[in-house]
Image (cartoon, rainbow, N blue to C red; front, side, top):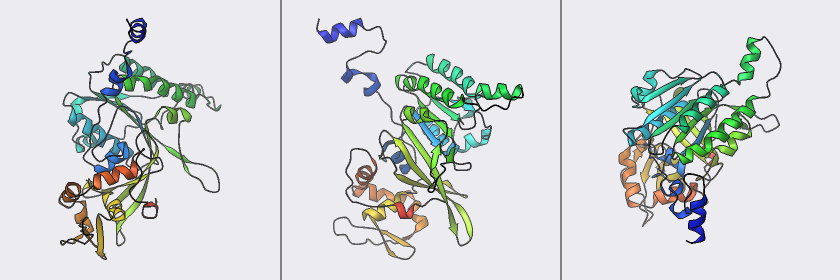
Length: 351
């Protein structure tokens, strides 16, 4: 018996395995959504998507955080027909119709109301402990930003007005406990959170809840937005996903996704800015766009308006006939050198 076999046999911990054979690395699912730039924000790849682990979606109120979470949860549940969602709810702002609008069968959603961090911690750890790796479960918390600590609630009931210093510690403990389970049980957890503005001359958005969330999260998004106007009429919003932390995507990347009042999430939004910067699409005249022949560099026939660049028919030939998918990967993903030095900063200013 070799030393590796001896060490493996002597281990008392279930799941101990030679690294190259470990299921925690060799059997890691990646679920693709219907929105290419969401896949890019999650994995740096239009053909990637949601994986197990903690993803935090942070931002001010009315910044589409819950919708982004339900979009990803819907993709997961469509990928696995036997999957269920464990939905922890502290805000009660998502009626059944909201889930149904994303194609989620509410009979496959276990709704658990929560009032404090400790209550959430005890329940989610118990649930994760009793889930097998083969079980298909996605966890959504809406939201951790609105959760009080148990002490804060008790002080209110006892009419005490002392400052509560326990919440950040409780949240840190929560995520410290659940993080190993998420990888070992192959479970994605989507946590909605709030942000606050840092005090200073040049304030920036800070994710609430302390450092524990930063240490534990695989992905942290801070979501901004800008109005999408036609004349003076607001037609929707361009949401900007600011990648604060990621295992796959270059941090501080800015990824736009458009939501209109009429059509909801525009699946192909965000691609145009990158395609223009990379020379895959040109703007031959004001308000018109056209694909570019990558071999000759010439503008191809068939100019379209901007609204038509949000259609599948416009992008299918670009992905099929060019290296645009690889270009996106090289620009956003960690470990890939950009093909071109492009700057999207000026076109992605937040409101």
